[in-house]
Image (tube, rainbow, N blue to C red; front, side, top):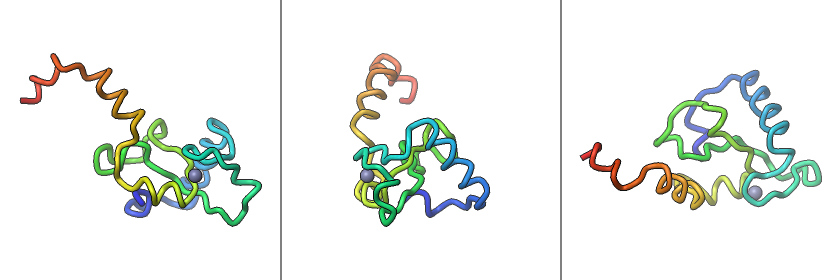
Length: 98
Ligand SMILES: [Zn+2]
């Protein structure tokens, strides 16, 4: 779980939860299960791009995820993101990093 490694005050966490609920709805970003209907299903803040790659609490990089999806995802890159990176960072730009 990426969220557990970083300290975030309760206030900030509440704010982020509210913000993300407004943006994405009260559901898990990955499996789209509604949090409201399943109060036992814990919702977590998940870094869409794993925290070790993009540290910090950048709101565009945060999604609400149920605990199960968050744990299942771990630090792996989501496929839509891999696709996006391949689109944005075209091979001709890669030599810059070499
Ligand atoms: Zn889920």
